[in-house]
Image (cartoon, rainbow, N blue to C red):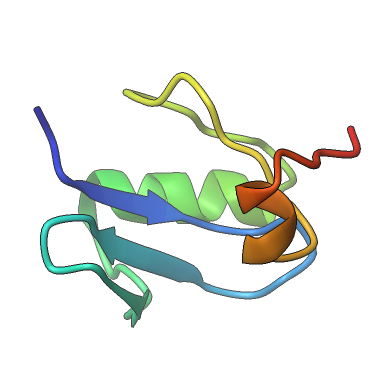
Length: 72
């Protein structure tokens, strides 16, 4: 199972790489070619791209998520 996730938050520039094993989150350098470049271009056009994830939510804070709060 994959332990690395690339994410982007609507309305914010850039992508992030999340390494679950290392418990780290870092900005991802803008891809210059390949599949991630295609994803970045689609995202810039307003398209959401999801592959290999079955839940993705933006919440106000880690505390809100930990307490079970989600305002959809």
